[in-house]
Image 1 (cartoon, rainbow, N blue to C red):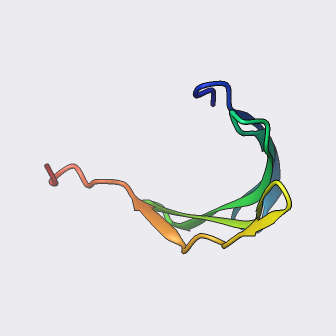
Image 2 (image 1 turned 135 degrees about the vertical axis):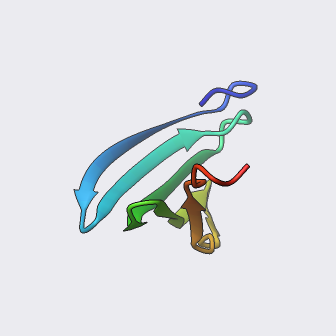
Image 3 (image 1 turned 90 degrees about the vertical axis):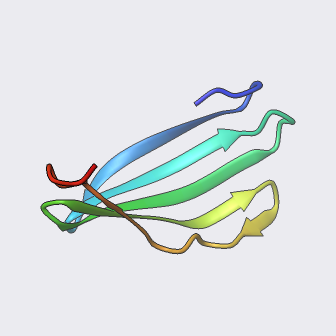
Length: 77
């Protein structure tokens, strides 16, 4: 993603019931970033995302909470 000069790159690897994405990037001010993003299938209609081992420059950034993304059913509006 590019926003005001920032960019990142991720390498996707299969893992258990989902994917690990090892990402590195550069913020607009030149600060180097890194993180491991985890995507796991919860069930046929839901996916869990979490970002861990995050850094910005020499600073450790806290891991995110788990976020569950659920597909809307055809009856939901």
